[in-house]
Length: 135
Length: 484
Image 1 (cartoon, chains in turn purple, green):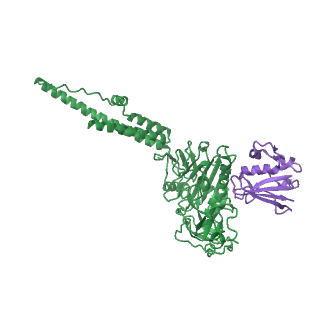
Image 2 (cartoon, each protein chain N blue to C red; image 1 turned 180 degrees about the vertical axis):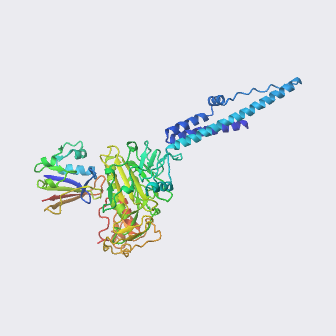
Image 3 (tube, rainbow over the protein chains, first blue to last red; image 1 turned 135 degrees about the horizontal axis):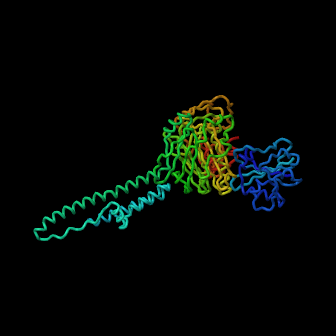
């Protein structure tokens, strides 16, 4: 399974149960890299993809996702599903936000390797960095 | 002559009527508006209104004196009639005096009622009261209703507990100026008290009230506006509140704010201890990226680098992104919290709630500490000293004296933040916010690699501050060549 997450400079993801940031260009980028494949996510994340038919809303999506499925994760801890994950796409906002919920997979350790790195300009972000990690 | 006077009187009366009507529109208080309209109606120089006044004041038409006759017998009668006529005229004059008096009274009452919702309590008063119950005071612990044409009038005693809250009671007009906004009420929340805030323990902020801001539903506005409290008697900032929308966000680069010296201001360098060396920043209460306020002294406090960058900036970023992406509004209030008569704030209370989605996008209530790890601060004056708890980092910066200053507090006599100038030790590329050390890199030279639009500063602090303002998302602010 492939996992997509968005993080700030401190690998934060949420503050007070709310996403730290969003960017409409990033959403388009995610749809681009999905290449028409369905993207699994829970109800909370669905609002970002409103009107798009390629999303599959399931509040237990990480549990139910299979090999090769793409999962967009905002508010779920990943460490419990680490064995199922073979690719992590991290979008870095390159900004700092308050955080109380963090990306819980240490990418530097556990054999994850950075295989791709790509910067692009977002709608409200000067630079968003896409990093692709594989085992 | 009489005709000219009469016309002048009529014109004046109409001017007064128009003035009252304008006051009615602008005073922002329903009862005040009604009274102003009533005053205006009573002042209209039309026959129907005059007749009404005459009836009320008991003024009757005085019959003209009969024409003179040569008959002698008439002399006696004529005298009596003349006397009666004169008396009637005098009486009428007296009665007519009541009209302007009543109108003046009505105007004063209207004015007072219009200000009925306003309250400005001086800091001195707040301090007096707060010392009775608690030693904590929020500067500008006030409840103010500000109307553009009217003067606030106290209506409610502020609570002695330091509790900031601001309440827009009606939809205010969007404004880019720091002018008071109609119907904005900035008051001390009764639920917040500095004494209940946990002591700093290594995290730049602490959640207050489970992250739920103290806004009442009626305070949330889908119309952008901003309001900055007046300075208190000690010159300290008070509550700042805004309904942040795209229409009031800045479209230009931030200007110079060095002319403002907030209370407690010192220029002190702790090279190797404080990021950027300088302990204090001029901290925007409502960040520049949200409302575009530059050198507004009602919106700038003396805050540590840590408060500015680690405490407040992340929250401002979150709000700014949300507003830009959704086009929604965020109700945003920042209150500097001063302990007693201290000149330096202990911290700031930051509250925010997204309006259109009722807080599902943005919701927080946090207290950011005005502290700097490694430095002890006297909050009464702003004086500071190293406490030895943070080891001094070697400065990698090769050139400027700022970064190579000895690691001791070096207070300087009111050194202002430098305005951009044609020369300086640092140059910021206005295109991308990159900070260069002048002379250390071809970008600051005259060759092909030279920047086309550099902005110069004499201190790194100023350069960085400017860089953040023009390129908040720049992840590598320092030029790689200059800062190897």
